[in-house]
Length: 202
Image 1 (cartoon, one colour):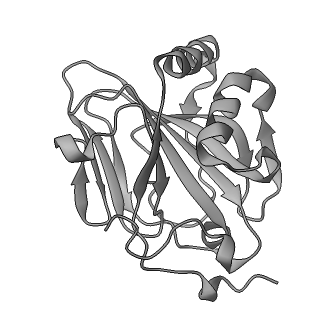
Image 2: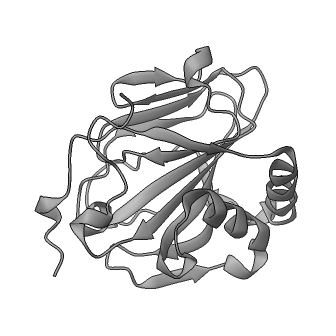
């Protein structure tokens, strides 16, 4: 059985690829076709007095699991191009896909500062994020750093291997632009399969 205490905790997020113009177009087409599926982000801690980090956003799940990896929702069949592009850039096996969802942030929306460390689920998945066509006024803070506002940390149409276990925060400070962010988790079973490595951004 995987002992998540053996998994590295000193890693940093890093950009591992960038979408081509064609890939951006394909993803946007599927996003537009299925846009009606956006709704309130599910709260996996129902009955517990706590905040939901996504209270001020909407989400749309390509696949949704509970915290014990039980399937709750499967829309993979209507996002074939998005999943193929995700697999290409992450080199992950789609058979190990766990949660995968879009976050929609209207102007003025934000994702509360939080870290994903609450349970075994968070310690046994590699997380990736795609920032679809986002302007510099989308504020992204992770690993104690401010991303996206500076030339060496631009995120638009990038694919990031993401350190979910450090505090992170997003805010849409744009003037009238809705921002979309894809979150994709892939499950692993051995500590060495955690894709983040110490000092990955050094």
